Length: 486
Image 1 (spheres, rainbow, N blue to C red):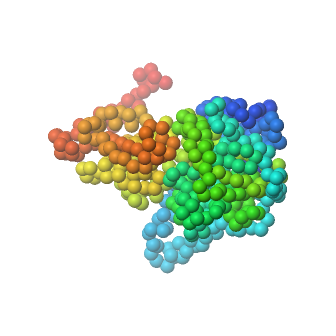
Image 2 (cartoon, one colour; image 1 turned 90 degrees about the vertical axis):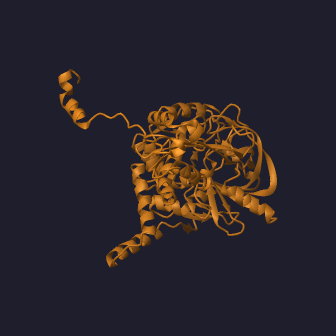
Image 3 (tube, rainbow, N blue to C red; image 1 turned 45 degrees about the horizontal axis):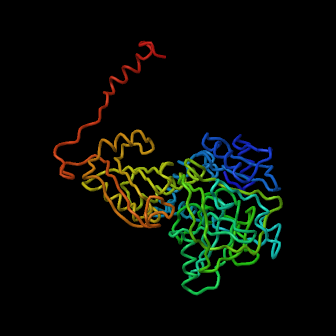
């Protein structure tokens, strides 16, 4: 399945009974958040608020709020199917086919992949309405103030587009944006993000400004790519095309050379000035705590384009699980095959909601030698944004990392705290509240695998799990109703 734009996905969700239109009047400050938080926590539908007081534009929230909706958003019935597609692509890249027919088949697959590349168009729905000069006013849209202590309204689901000043390669990222006034916002570029790298480069090169455009409301797969921790040289729009099995149409902005999704609902065009920063925050964040005021770059909006009768998309964050948890689950599943390329002993991985992505990662491995668990910890800390993970727990291959009861049982039984804790230090997420220094702090790895003989000085064999004989289990299964159980 594929979706041309956000409206197409809204219609699909409605047909599936997974969207609720709310026609009662609601306030964009706090009220929408409280409604949505209750719906998300109960596994409820996507919400389209059609009567936001003081605005003509509807607000769409919670479109990714379950595993099923997130899978649909990325064009599959379930996330396992998406993992299978990624694994197939990796096999094609790393295992050259043998024989004429196999090579011809692979060539056809590569040609098919080439059709997923983005395409530039001259006319775009996102430019049906063009607003420039003194008429530019971000407040024309129902931008949400989500939590009581928030410093103001925040744009929470943007595709922020920048271009590397040296290579000219574009990047699409999702960064929150506090609205300061009708023509300026904050740009929450955290230390380790690609947008921050472009900002630093523009400062180092002495550029007077860095062009920035912000797309709101493309098709759901394209929106998701902004949140994915892709390598800096990987084209997010090519990834979106792979997910959609159709190239993304891009259009050149009106006032700069950046390319944005042609099917977006709203586009903000403008620039940041290297070195110009302003306090941003507080903001009720995905950790469940407020991230407090800190200086960040200022985005100046010089042009707004939008579709006729646009939809304003938003994602709410707060105490997990929230909508961003399900967006992150896709990242976890899709990146597992890529992780296995570097660490083939990895079997599965879980980034539970309570860990807010960067606080806790649980990984199962096929252990082969003493110290293997510790090797995997250091390997994960060396993989891109996995370097920010504060706690890594390593368990054996037969442990279900998604069953937190089993994980807790294995961990508390299997560890010797004097031997199995690994402490390290390095970069951590800017939003981490536990560290005394922003962006730098401690990490811990916990090796909860079964220990091999003499590993860590251990004497004797590891005791076996308590498991009933299969013959007895089959006997009891056959006589279950005889015991008086239904």
